[in-house]
Amino acid sequence: MAMVGIIANPAASKDIRRLVAQGRVVPDWEKVNIVRRVMLGLQSVGVTSVLGMADSSNLVYRASEDPKLSIDLDFVDMPAFYSEGDTVRAAGLMAEQGVDCLVTLGGDGTNRAAVVGSRSIPMVAISTGTNNVFPTMVEGTLAGLAAGLVADGRVSLADVAVSSKVMNVYVDGELKDFALIDVALSKERFVASRAIWDMETVFEVFLTRAEPASIGLSSIGARLAAVSLADEGGLQYGIADAEAPTPGDRVVLAPIAPGIVPPVAISSWQHMADGERIAIEKRHCTVALDGERSFAVTDSQQLEMEVRRDGPPVIDVNLALKVAASQGLFNLATGN
Image (cartoon, rainbow, N blue to C red; front, top):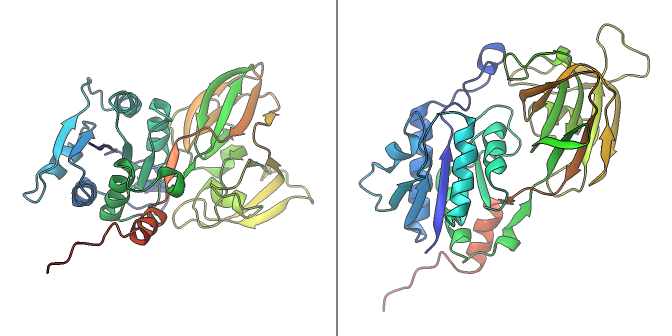
């Protein structure tokens, strides 16, 4: 029998960007409703088993409290610390327990944590965060339908999914970490508030995807050259020093946060080939992964970036439903 995992992040859409921009807030009750609709979608296509991750707001448990749901819900057996590490451990344990598809609710950071835990589980990522590129705005019922049809094999994963890309970060030749969408280098020397929100501190960005219809660092890259999930390679660009601009700087208009569309001066940019390592000039800086500062490096350490198609399969919900319809999977038997 097919089993689907659900990881919902109650902290998504609640960071500092609510204060410095017009970012939306997705309250817990709406996240509960989304998870409930995912489970109803799963149930309608025959999925009977869901493995959830416990969270500080009990989102998945609360979603299951519906008389229309008869789905068998269990939770990953692990201690809960209500941190990013929970998502990492939960995804890893779900892979070990044979979960066929993983549905996530959160932003780029939530999905990155899930991928740290497992790169093998096919994913349906629902956006409830800020400046998201990896997850998409999709109705929970439709996400559940697509996840369920792929999980039980009625829709072939190969027909409706693309393996995601990652941006590997090396420090002194050793793989340190990775991002799903963007790595940003900040002039600040300390992690402090993790969310990247002040563009004046950012001096270089590396992207796996540069989507024109996105918000944040990816949108800036898309003004230079669009790079989609299906495209090979990535994009690198440097942000010009606002205090010392040069005549050759290129200025683009980009939505760096909800409601904030400033001009951004670009000092240089280039395509990144798949598997190509780019060395960064040594300097004190912090490294932000998918919008959140993660660690600092000194001017004695060598940073390198490398884009690879080495992430989990990402299910295209619209395509999965289109394929299912073309195969007659939604047709019900008619009476005599």
